[in-house]
Structure formats: structure tokens, C-alpha cells
Length: 231
Length: 144
Image: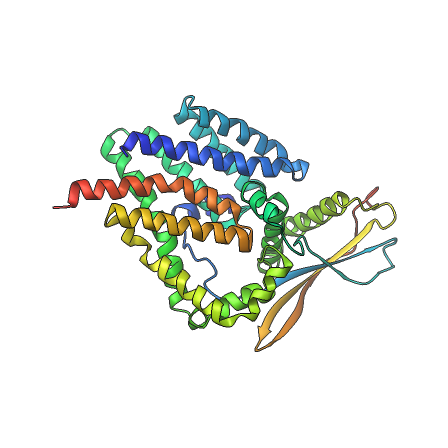
């Protein structure tokens, strides 16, 4: 995937993620509907591909108003990642040289890799993760299980211990995706399954769409590294 | 300032998801006819009992109510760390919005009070600590 195609694909996927979020907010309290109606219209324009550099800038300004409205992110990490992707797109459109544009896109890819690796790192240094205790508590009494019957998963400590290690190993090994195209395909497939599982278990649907929008940067970075540093 | 901090955190995010087990907030509410009366506390929860396969598939594309529930949880946590009027009011507004969505006639019980209980586990036992109790306020009709 060449650089321009990766940027355009990022715009399309981010626009879809924003459409998905905006539609959800149109169902919410009136006070926030106007901001998300604006975001919905801008996202459709981004999807179509009209003056994308300016649409990205206006979407960024809209994003700041949304941050101000909720006094921080509405949906935690997914809002942070979507704003990071949007900021990088804005910078890429206005950078004077291809080298600087590629640098910004590589920074986005690095942040996506770190989003998995750092999560894995903070888990593996916590003994409560080794035994599955954190996942047990998560299902037993936290506010996150997407339905009441999922709380019964807390009664299966062996499965939760196994799941904990599966998550830790996946997150820590994620940076290896840059090594080859085969590992990249496998890594992105496992991460898709991971996000689908999070949607099912914890209702984190926005993370799925937003992280998907960041994947073109990983595909591009892997190809870039292989092309330029494989010898 | 808060917006600027949030914006900066986008570029140097710590990316720590569920790094440890932390106390989790429960919201309990009581609705009453007058400011003096008070009834039993009941849990305010947007979590469904169970989800069908169709619900799960739908939730990939549209999960508004659940994302609202996650935001209320976030406001509850923020309210303890940073007891601002904004966080309290967001919780009140969203409780009111949900009660109206459920078709509850708030004319009968226009006074709302909520409290935040933070649940932790001690071995096999769960313990809840009440860390915040709001003032009783009128959420329907003319404000006093």
C-alpha cells in the first residue's frame, strides 16, 4: 500500500468511525446533538473525499469543542486515539515535504503499537494479572461487563487466568508485526478478534472502529521498513 | 485548561487499559414527592440482564445507551477525584434523561438524590463504601 492510498484509507475508516459515534449521540441528550450533527456532516464529506485537508481541520476543531463539552474524552481511549489519528491527518496534509508527512504517519503507527505494547507491559508487571485476579474482579463487580449474565465469568478462574496470559502475550508481542507481512496479517487478525471480544464482553464498540482506522498506518509502516531496511 | 490537558494527553497517551483492579462505582438513586420525604435507594443501572446474538451484532454498530453508561461511570469516578459541579450535573442530567426514556412520570416524584458506592473485593467478599451523597434536587417542574 503506497503512502497516498494509506492516508486515504485512514480518512475513510476514520470517517466511518465518526459516523458511527455521531449517530449514537443523535440518540442521546439534546445538549450534545448539535456538535455531533456537525461531526456527522463533516464525516460524510470526508468519506466522499471533498477537500479532505480542510475537512480534517474543521473536524479537529469540532473535536476540541467535544472535548470541552465533556470536560475530557467521552469514551476514554477511543476518543484519544480518534483525535490522535485526526491530528496526524491534519499535520500530514499541511507538512511541506513527503519526508515530514511520512514521519507523522510513522508516529501514528508507533502510537498504535505502543497502545498495545504499553498495555501489555503494565499488565505483566502486576502480579494480579498473572493469576487472572484483575479479570475476575472486572467481571465480578466492575461497571464494565456488557450484560449481567457475563458476571458469571468470574466463577471460572482457570479460564480467566488463561485469558489474562493470552491478552498479555498478544499485547507484548504486537510490535513484531513490523517484521514481516505474514506476521502483520496474523497480528491484525488477532487484534480484530481481540476488539470484537471486547465489544462482546465490555461493549467497547467504538474502540473497534477507531483502532481499525489506525491500521493503514501499520500496514504502510511495515512495508516502508521492509522496503528501506530489509538488507 | 482542562481541554488543553486532554488534548495534550492525546499525543503522549500512557495507554494503560485495566492495568489493575480498582474500586468500581455503583450509582444509587431515590425519587421522592417532596424534599423532606425519602424512599429506598435503588441501583441506577443501564446494564441489560443478557444480550441476544442480534443485540451483540447490533452493538458493534450502535451501542449508544451502553456508551452513555460508561460515561456516567467515568463522571462518577471523576466526581470523587475532582468534585466539580459539572460532573455532578452530568450524572443528574443523564439519570433524568434515562428515567424519561423509561417513560417514568416524574411529576409524581420530582425530587432526585443520588449516591456513589465504590465496590472493592476483599478475598471472596465484596465491600461497598459510600463516598458521595448528592443534595436532594428537583429535576422536574419549576426549580425551587
